[in-house]
Length: 208
Image 1: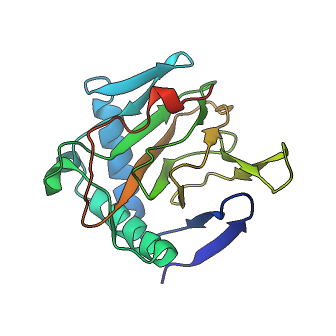
Image 2: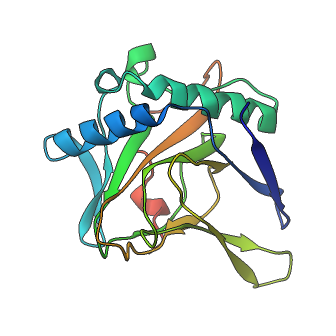
């Protein structure tokens, strides 16, 4: 059974994140990483920021095991929100995939941003990380005017983190000698009523 740990962060809004380890075979992660690295130079990307391309988009058909990741995210997300959730993608009839990959080499990072306002939750699933390859950081108001806390979430292989799509976050610099590979996605209420075809996150929401 998947063990889920809840963390409640108080502030002007009820903020939270949930980190857990979904039951997904390690071989699936290995195969996903292998496919990402094989095709990453040949497929569509968006957001050239901080000297590298963010957001590598690949079709679901390339990844037979990835549906387990989305099922785990939707199941945990429903427990958090009380609503059925879905990760839209072209294989289930939507015009655009709401999942993407990030491959960060040594010295690379992801700047402060949030995700789509139409999404309910966003998430990350760690496919290949090592010590010092970069952690997830939330910038969170703790209720005091002008005081913002930096909440750091350790990245480890096989961990999933879910959080509100409006929550500002960034990923620290990869200080290892290897590649850091993760899968990010947005979760929407199902059935979808107002789905818009937009990038995974927007440049106007990129803060640094």
